[in-house]
Image (cartoon, rainbow, N blue to C red; front, side):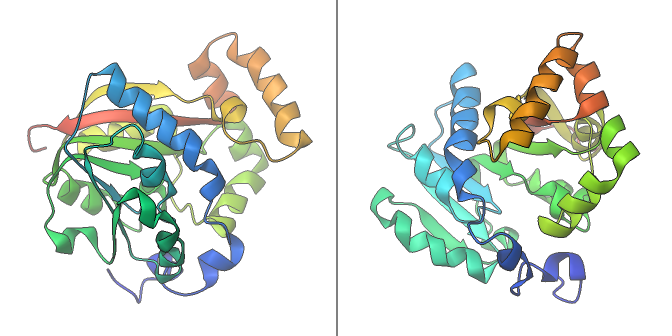
Length: 240
C-alpha cells in the first residue's frame, strides 16, 4: 500500500472516519443479506470466507448466523476501522489490520463489498485478487448515470465524503471484472434506492420517481437516474 498516495492515505489517517464516524455499520444487515441470498441461490456453502476491506466488520458478524461452521476473516488497512472489531468478539471472526495480499490467505469465497471504487488502481488490485479464491462476491455502487453527470454534485459528494474515485454503470463494472480475468457467473441489481437503509424523506421521494422510471426497464432506469448498486458472483477465468 502506497501511503504517499492521497487516494489510499485518507484511510490511514482521520479523514475518512471524520466524515463517516459509523463506518456505514447501519448498512451491514442489508449487505449481509444480499451476500447470503447470492450464495444460497447457487447452493454455495463455503468453509472459508475472507472479506477484503471489511471496514467495521459488521457484514461478517451478520453472516455468522448463516455460516455457523465457516472460518470468517476480515482485512482492512484503516486503523480506525479496528475500533469496531472487539464488538464482534462473540461471533468468532478473525480480523487483521493490514494488506490482505500480504497474508497469502486463500479462501473459498472472497467478499469485495464497496471497495474497488475507492482504489487508485482497481486493475492491479483485481488482477492480484483473482488468485486468492475459488469464488468472489462483489458489491459495486453504480454512481454513474445521466442524472449524476448532468448535476455533477452527486459525484463530487461521494468523492469527497466516502472516497469514490471511480464511477460505474452496470456495463462498465462487469467489463472491468472481465478485463481483469473474472468470469461473471451471476449479477443482479440490488434496488438500493428502495431497499438500503433510508436516511431521509428526500431519498424516499426520489425512490418513488425511480420506481416509475424503472417500470420501463431496470437498465434504462439505472443509467438515467441511478440509485442502484450491483451484486456480482464471479470466478477466476482464463488470464486476459
